[in-house]
Amino acid sequence: MQKENPILPHTGFAKKANNYFTKKYFGKWTDKPISELFGIDRRDNEIPIFMNEEFPERENVKAIYSQPLKEFSIDWEKLLSYYNEKKYQKITKILRSNLSDELHILKKIIKKEAVFSRARIGYEEKNISQKYKIKIPYSGKEIDRPPAKYASNGKFNEENIPIFYGATNDLTAVAEVRPHPGHYISVAKFLLKEDIEVIDLTKIPLYLFCNSKKTLETFTFLKHLQNFINTPIIPEKQDLYLLTQTIADISRNMGFSGIYYHSSVSKGQNIALFGDQICIIDNSSKLYKVKEVSFNFDEVKYTNTRKNILKET
Image (cartoon, rainbow, N blue to C red; front, side, top):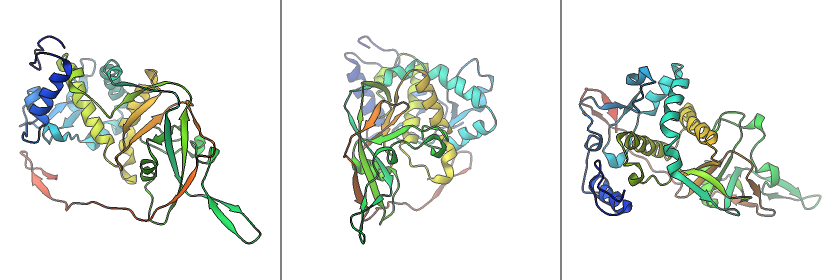
């Protein structure tokens, strides 16, 4: 990256190149379409996620680009339809072949003794006399990962496969369990027992992906994935987790301990750990009561696309 790059013209250090591109394509004064970077004909409004000669049906797996670069958007439900058409193994193969090398670029080392918060709705009761009970927070196994038989489908885990979901602070941990006003929330602190390597999806610098068209396509996909992970998924749409679960499987098979990512419901970060590298801190549990929950919403409107298809905006 010290030399002139044929894709992204610049001189100097890699970070300067990243700043150049960020200002040019992501700046608030520009509204450049994704075709500016990849030479895509937007009249078709769709391109393959990856071009891979081993995947003959690649022309059918489409990622829908409908926003400028600064607002990455992909039609995950359309992609999910290909999973439902029993092309799971082929999609997994194409993702694995294209991501295995590039995911190492996003490696983050989290040091031993880093602390994360984990929340659970509810509490235990403790008798303090024959007449009175008090509420106390869950602790120990009651707030740790659930047993396999109780592990539900999650962002990075399949049903009956428990993993540790934690957050960088109590507020984010509480927000992640989607409480209602009046709910009591138990929160405990957990400590990393060793240094770990995770995939960091909070930062995806462009300058690390400027080596070729293939790596730029990977960058685009990862930015879409980042945007998808940052979007809350309603309970009835949890089958959309198929893709993120695939990414988790690839990361685990590559030897990573977990995935570090932005919360979709708070300003903090989350971590999903595949193994047992974390333990609860004794006497760290606290009990909170939710006073209020804020909402932000927009009126649903539709616009016509170039193909005269109504699209929600």
